[in-house]
Structures are given as structure tokens and as C-alpha cells.
Image (cartoon, rainbow, N blue to C red; front, side):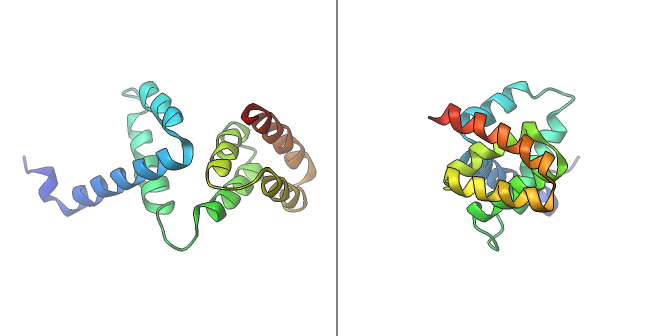
Length: 135
């Protein structure tokens, strides 16, 4: 069996994983990531590794958009897809990335036009709950 670190792909994956974990912790917070890591088991480990390497280590680390903008895009995508559990997590992340509650409100107002009023209505309820928790 060959040394995995002699494989350039393994090295790239290890670097993406490390960079992804750094960004994931910065955006979602240590407590969230620690909970996700503690829940990880043989069934979910590959998925957790994939999102750490690709979502966080490949996309969130790209220089083309700052984290505030990435949060705006992510909030919009989650509203459009109806992913309200993920939306709550990313409202918290948006605050951590420097968005003010009024900016989150503006993103959600924008989603009402492009994603539909029912989707935005649900998103406002989620965001309102998260913002109240932060007070």
C-alpha cells in the first residue's frame, strides 16, 4: 500500500479539509462544528468530510466573494430551496460574517420577489426566531 501523503490528490484533499475546517469553524462557530463532529458516525463521516472539503474548503475559501456576500447568496439559495433548518444555521453564520439584522431582512425581502412570498414568509419566521435568540 502506498503512502497516502505521497499522492498529490490526498495532499490536496488534506489541505482542502484543513482550510475547510478553519472556515467552517469561523463561519458556523466552534460549538456548531463540535456538535456536528460529535454526531458523526460511520454512516455520516464521508458526508461530513465531503462538505468540509468542498463546500467549506473549495467554495467558501475562494477569493472572488467575501464572506458577507457568500452569506447573502447562501441565505437566498436556502430560502429558494425551502431548507429552513439550514437557513437558521446560516442566519447565525451571516451575523458572524458581519451582516446586520437589517441586511438579513433586505436579503429576505429580495427573496420574496424571486423565490415567492410563502418561502420568504417562512424564512422571516426562522430568522426572527434566530435573531431573538441572539438578543
